[in-house]
Image (tube, rainbow, N blue to C red; front, top):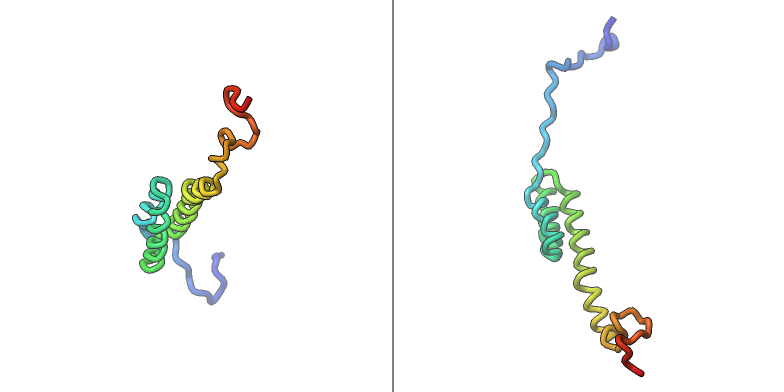
Length: 111
């Protein structure tokens, strides 16, 4: 008894099967991912370039390039935009020690 239905074409055996080739991983996507941690703005820019190249060439790495964009944007927000906004608001220069807003003055000042 065979595994195929009568009249259906025969399928390839394991000896005849050839594994599908795996597309190479995009080097620019890997660079974008590394830059996202080292220089976040560079990670954003190179990440967008990598996404375009990966889609054009069919290489793997679109998810890695997208992660580079997200990580770069998040780290840019945390390390550049938020501190700039806090500094511009004058919160740290208002006499509040360490910006905690606890009303504590160091070493007995204000008595």
